[in-house]
Image (cartoon, rainbow, N blue to C red; front, side, top):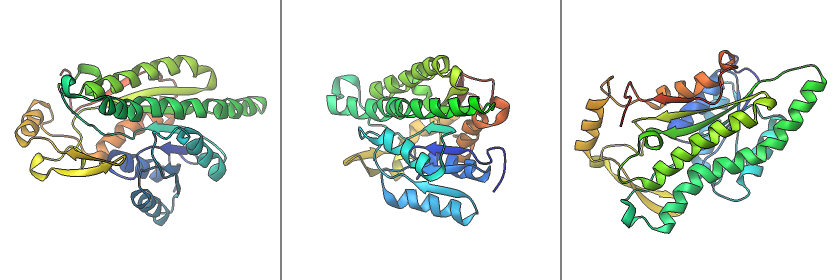
Length: 276
């Protein structure tokens, strides 16, 4: 499999399902060697198998991104398997909602740890590895451009009632993105973020299909009130929620060589919605 990402090593958290899976498959189709992550072995291995069956390259790094050693293990998997790190996509996440007076400390830290602390730890672990790779490339007279693409949300841009924890975390990831764009320019690494609006995944299905997902050992209800879902879709200029493949396309735009001089940016992937 060869394409615009031929030979690149791409690490994608939460890539066993949903948007992350779509990103992993898109990157693999374009020639990237992918490190797939999921909380559970089954989904991660299924994506690896799918990529391998299509002629691509992929390995799994199973486990929670919130584990204190995950960053080092994730980066270590890429180095041990492929000897490099070129693209990091911090995608893993979920919501655990309530109004602020009912959000417990457990709820607050669970979401902050997943959406903000985990990307911080992954990027902290990546920095010395990327620094050493850049030093070797510079000594050899080569310049290799790398990518960090963080996943945010319109909740972090406009706020969302009932999601103080999630909105705060997604706003924080934008701040982290803009800071690292300044710090990592000298490492020939662009750092950007994509803020998604309504994307149709298992976490945003109609509440008519509501069910409970086991996430980090907790039973989390997922699904959206069907009336609210319909109303939300009516406010979107394109008239519908986006698909995981369309979401992956927005992330892919930051990964291609044409984006070598784009850094510190936040891209809204919302179907045309421009305000909350």
